Amino acid sequence: FYQKDQVKSLVGIDPSKETWALNEAVTNQLGFDFQYIQTGAEHIPLDNQSMDTIVITYTLCTIPDTLKALNEIKSSRQH
Image (tube, rainbow, N blue to C red; front, side, top):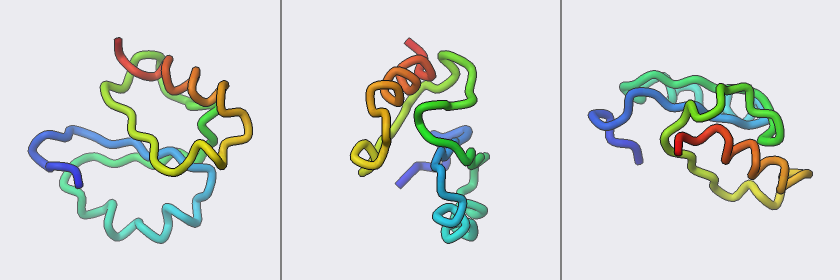
């Protein structure tokens, strides 16, 4: 769903490496830089304000500490 000419890079965060391994062939053909980080949303290893857009889909019900995760996501986004 991403337009190749409008995306410079994409970072995917998920604690399940197996889930991302299923999509590896697709992510290798995106046409822009893709990085997978195996971690939970409560501890995102990115610099503060390093992302311009953050997308969350079907995940909040699976995160043990939702408030901590949302605060971590908020600090990763550029204001």
